[in-house]
Amino acid sequence: MAEAGFYSVATGTDDLDAAKCFLCGKELDGWEADDDPWAEHKSHAGKCAYVQLGKNENDLLLSEFLSVVKQYMINEIKRLSEVAKEQVDEKAKAVQKKCFGRR
Ligand SMILES: [Zn+2]
Image (cartoon, rainbow, N blue to C red):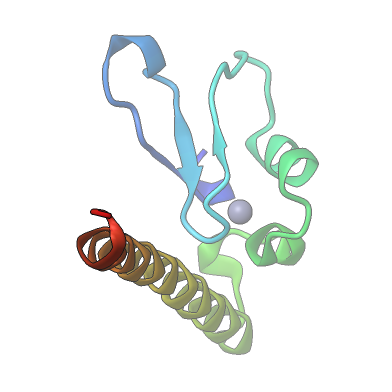
């Protein structure tokens, strides 16, 4: 599974096989013994840049590796900006409630 980009995100006994792609963030669980991690990754997240390369990490050309790193950084910046936006929205709501909450 790791070769197909997945790492464990299990939180307890109910989701022992939960795995997440390091690049696209797709989470999958309920794996069957004969599941092909690459095929599952492709069928559930076909637009993932790592799946589209379709190679194990050690087989990537330098340019391919750098494109994966670039996409990882883009995805991480998007994720962090979403977190920051949610924090700003929460603060804005609190200020709005403070200013206009009592009438
Ligand atoms: Zn992926």
